[in-house]
Image (cartoon, rainbow over all chains, first blue to last red; front, side, top):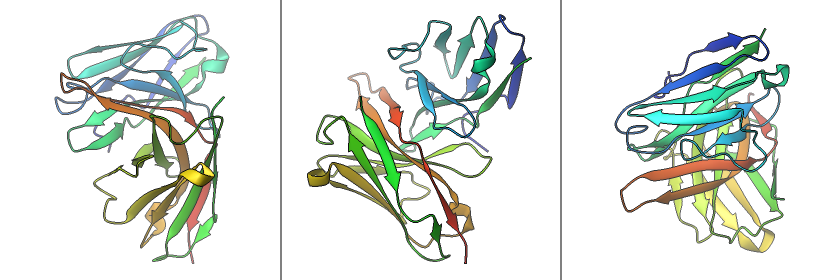
Length: 109
Length: 126
């Protein structure tokens, strides 16, 4: 079981908005920024968000991140079928290790 | 455009040593970046293994620290992973990635990974 807790799955219709949560503690999310990754099955993870809310070049503004206290969220608006993937949050922990959440499978119905 | 490519044996015997190499192209490994290994067991989530700076400084996942060594070869622009005493639990896709990792004056530790290699499956089995 991951130290960072994510819902196993979320779903929404095309064009709608979905929110994926990532819950941690004061030793990780509470003190350090969060990143988010998209992993299409069978492929490598891809960075979507870093430093809580910054997007690398090439990532559309449909993807946005935020953090409050010991939790972070990834919002995806204008859902497309191509957004179907697993999404992971990540951060640094006081145990001197990088951590990832358990992952959330997004279904675009 | 930075690209990373993992290579190594796809099958390792139990109690043996897993050895992988990641070749970096499009960037010098001596840049101000950390270079990481992340693994993913079949059907499971991501697990950080560790990272190395070009100077040789390393950080390892505490749960794997006693068995992990990450090294860098600047002349070949590559870095490597060795994991000893492997068991079936070490069966996973192993990814290498470029990392950004720094601490601010406020004590915030920033870390993220971009880009990632395509990954290589290592199976531990006799």
